Image (cartoon, rainbow, N blue to C red):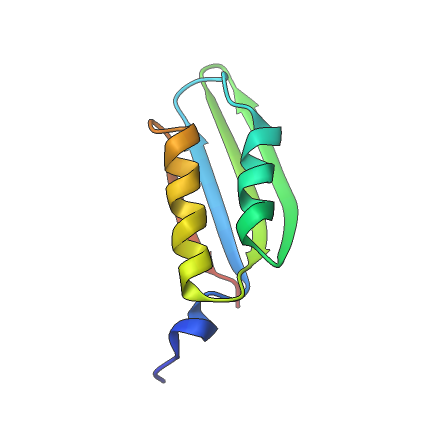
Length: 87
C-alpha cells in the first residue's frame, strides 16, 4: 500500500488550533488558496481562549503542501496544526 508523494497531497483535512482568539481566518484562507487546488471550510470553533479551524483541502503536489505549511507557520507561529488524509 505504498503511495506516491503526489497521492499523499490530495484530499487532506487540516486542523489548525490556536492558543488565543487573535487569529485572522481570512489570512489563513488566503495562504491555503494560494497553494491549494481546492479548499473548503468545514469547521470553525471559538472557545474562551482557543480557536479551532478545519478545512478539506487538495494540493496539486507535495511541494504545494509544504509551502502551505510554511505559510501557515509564518502567519501564526504559535498555532498547532495537522494534515490528515481524508478517506
